[in-house]
Image (cartoon, rainbow, N blue to C red; front, top):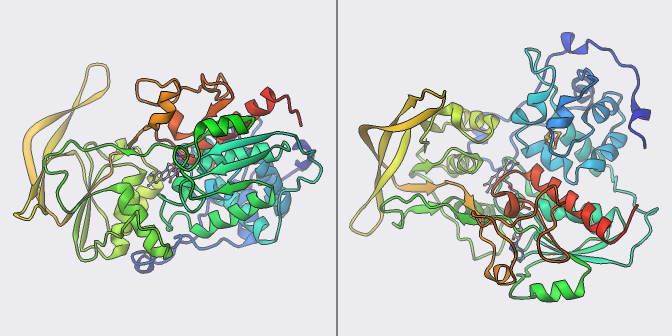
Amino acid sequence: MGIDENKKARPLFEFVDVGREEPEKHSIESRQIEFKEIYQPLEQPRIKQQASRCLDCGNPYCQWKCPLHNYIPDWLNLASEGQFIQAAELAHQTNSLPEVCGRVCPQDRLCEQACTLNTGFGAVTIGQIEKFVTDNALAQGWRPDLSHIPEQPYRVAIVGAGPAGLGCADVLARSGIRSVVFDRQPEIGGLLTFGIPEFKLEKEVIQKRREVFESMGVEFRLNTLVGRDVTFEQLRSEYDAVFLGMGTYQAVAGGIEGERGKGVYKALDYLIGNTVKQQEWDYKEYPFIDLKDKKVVVLGGGDTAMDCVRTAIRQGAKQVICAYRRDEEAMPGSRREFNHAIEEGVEFQWYRQAQHIDLDGNGKVKAIEFDIKEPISQADGTVKLESSGRSEVIDTDAVIVAYGFKANPPQWLQDLGIELDNQSRVVATETNAYRTNLDKVYAGGDMVRGADLVVTAIADGRKAAQAICEDLEVFV
Ligand SMILES: Cc1cc2nc3c(=O)[nH]c(=O)nc-3n(C[C@H](O)[C@H](O)[C@H](O)COP(=O)(O)OP(=O)(O)OC[C@H]3O[C@@H](n4cnc5c(N)ncnc54)[C@H](O)[C@@H]3O)c2cc1C
Ligand code: SF4
């Protein structure tokens, strides 16, 4: 389907009469206890109306800002006409997981930030519409039709079933190349399943997507650790190419005295333990950490910290404080998720740099001490943080450290001579189409970029798949 064929005349100034409308959220009371997505579904007529607000600018900034360069104005146009299946078909031409991106992309700093209407009229609700058209199509039984694609005599091994690996598998399947995706976890999704909590992305969404991939001929070998259950050398000799999308999993330590005390947790251990409990999965590697009735301090200001504070609220913590060393403006995470945390009752403390965790006689956390920072404007316009000389002590029962993640490529990969940069990220640049220095080996996602976003990981996996096709001389 050509994208220009979809374009029909539409009212140009719809946005004047119809304002930006987000779906209603569930009540705060239910959000404070439920691990469910917080938005209520939008009905078709409202989706059509919201989609019709798009101006169809000659130069769609939203499309350029989206790391996948989605054909946003085109599928908005189809949605405005109620052609939801066609819209979903078009969305899948550039995105392997549109229903996921619609839910978890920080649209406020990507597509919607760039929307022309985001200049006082309210951006088009691009993410919500992307989510709706995909959920709707999948619920109606729509599946990608690959019957016209000739099967190629090649097989590709993909290590990691996160967004990067799935993006790669999707493009390969659409090119007639079979892939086998290996993952050490019992379910696909990477951090989508074992990281991001249900109130942002329900696990059923990934389970449904797994069925879609399987219907496209993608094979998943789960509970399989590459480097132990199967060697990398085996993969390289048995497959025509190998894509690595293994993520970054080494938690950045706080460097705080007392950090090893009882009651001090790593963010991902806390989040995964909670998901495993919610899903009733038999996955003993991640025990449940129960913060009910506890006073909790979370250190950090990114998406992971927001997920931790909101999880602690839902577990019934007595008080949840997020301490960040800069201010609200400087927080790296999505503004939307920060606002959700405020609504749900999280308290924020700015300019707090953790110094020391006090432990009781049993080695259990009892308080945390912060150095209070002061922002000092510099001559070059930047702001430097300096100690104010004051400190603050907060009594607490638990501390969660959410300072982000560092790349941690396995030793076997390093022994084979894969090129790494000075932050241990695999070198595989976009200009070289995510090829590594090892023959037939490609890489993308967090292990190449460092901890980043779902949408950028998908984009890397897709581009690497295109390079694999090019190198195997498969042109569909
Ligand atoms: C708590 C949290 C919340 C986040 N929230 C958001 C958000 O709201 N929006 C957003 O855009 N991004 C968010 N992110 C970031 C996003 O999840 C990641 O950038 C993205 O998942 C990276 O994708 P990936 O495929 O590179 O890696 P991952 O998703 O980490 O997937 C890597 C996969 O490789 C597997 N693997 C690793 N080594 C092996 C091995 N040796 N053998 C077999 N399998 C292996 C792992 O089990 C895993 O499944 C969040 C991250 C975290 C931690
Ligand atoms: S993938 Fe993300 S950035 Fe791109 S259109 Fe969808 S929500 Fe926006």
